[in-house]
Image (cartoon, rainbow, N blue to C red; front, side, top):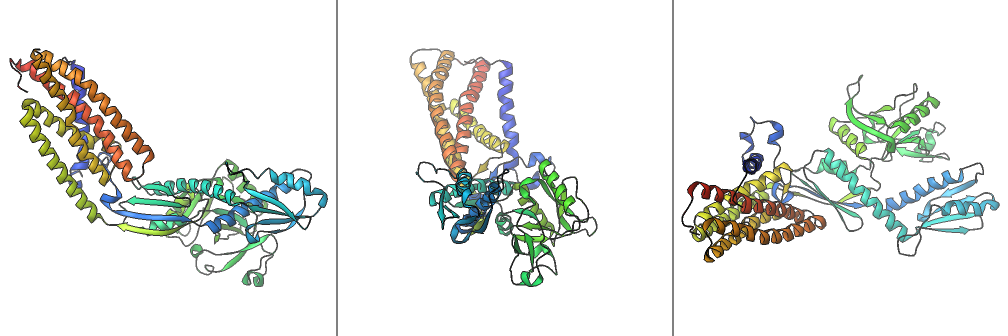
Length: 537
């Protein structure tokens, strides 16, 4: 137990040195790190919302608009399915009023076929015993599809899962470190972004559904129809966006309902500049299928205006002067650089499957966090001094080794957290202080076991070897259960609980390493050099 090969000695010291080096950016003030490489200086511990301040936003799904969207999606499915194959089913008088979808089957002989085609798109909802859509007939030829409460809740739950992922991608694109994004209840998402003191940009970004569509302008609509918001059959009246530019912003335009190409086929979106006007724009690129579709649409409609629509508002409606090949296009408008960049982020991260609105927002200042850090540091220093005083009085030389192990353990925790860019929260500070206090457990067990072996009459070397060997079993068993507890807290916990679990898990591993391996190396070196005749412990 006291024989260390040279490679193991070097490995232990190298591990400690590496952790200490990576702990430096988290300890030393930033002005002293300017001479160091930027990548190294940025490898440090991130502070959570409760320590660095930041923004807290609570998003809620717009259930009414989701139900409307849910029914409109089914409408598109019905239209497509009824046109499928050679035996088309003629339908008409389609209505989505009253939160239900109804349409007229023109040929009574095709009613059973229409029901069979639609039934493929309805299904049971979990263990509720209900279906997601109720299908019925009224007045003989009118089919009515009504979404059930269970079906809406199941679809909403699925949409909220996707929405949480989209929100996470958008915030990550902003370069924010360690945001907390969790679902709350059935229709809410909590977003906490450390270090962000101005939530306006975040709210603007998260509020974009980013539903991008390209539709042909309906040139048959008269100015009177547009002014009265009366669209011809198969078309709709949409407003121009505030970003559409002077002269058209606030106005309206008639576009065909049929979506020629959608943002689902986007491959990339980047903020750029128009080569002629030097105005900020968003350059978009479609995937293979989207590029081919875009090329065909522009080839078939040369000379016609083409509306670019974002979240139900028209950004621009340029003429197609020539076929647009290559799968690339440009979205222009009265964008600022920041606005174009936010739109590009929203498009890259995908569209939200459900509209989200901000129902609560808070900005947490850094003052409270600074006070918490100061008090946490004081608590850590007091705990360390108390433990050091007790260990040195009780175990003398071995108490000195324990003290060195505690200091190394603290630096290793900081270094490991910095390597993984972990986030330190207020509960994390509590975990750090707890780890400092619990780190001496291993040394207490070892030292008491060495005393016990001495009382049995063993010599110095044998007492130390058996003390470490026998105590190590109990140490490893006890700490494995602690690590399991930390893993469970991290897996099922959120936010601050995860912060506590991370620090606790890292602290357990480093405390076992320093308390058992590092102190054993120090003791072995002392025994080898001094060859003591008497062991005072």
